[in-house]
Length: 197
Image (cartoon, rainbow, N blue to C red; front, side, top):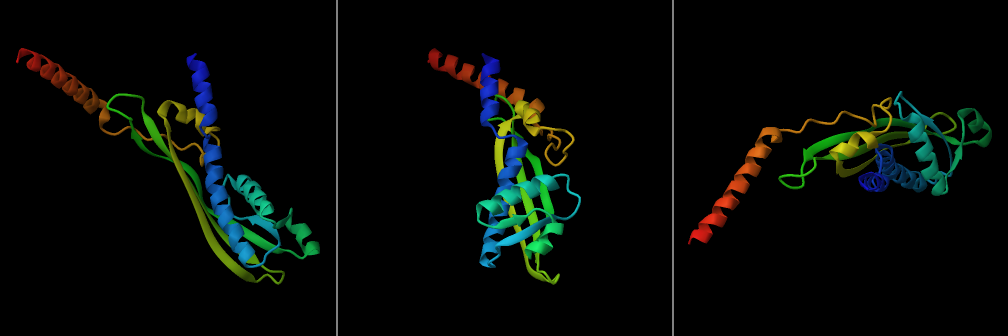
């Protein structure tokens, strides 16, 4: 029964890849709006730099731009014959990190905050090689997941940008049992002292 519940919870909780995609879509939508305001209808996308997720950024950005009516030429070599401008994208940040570790109550399972951040720098280059537009867009998405589920949701360890190390829980290791013991002792004392009266 527990295995079935865990499977359902994990199916409903986005993986780190899906969380990163949400942040990337927000950034891509903003870029799409900027391109539309410059009446851009056809572009070739070039991903600059050596970010491990370059393929993911190109795939998601292509999808978002196509959904918004912008035609994407698949490669730079094809762009000359189609007279398209080049959209040069440099990922400034594309990462899923972990934030605070907490518990919903004094006792209970540990939970950790996940934060997906995406920041893209874009240059639009015309057929003469001149930069006609520069933009920087970003997207951030966060949620809180069970500590025990975090490693399962992170995906492949080969992609460091999706599977950062979980932070250590700060200060509650010794303090928590003392607080719980104090609360229980106080309740027992109050119970028996009120009965004595």
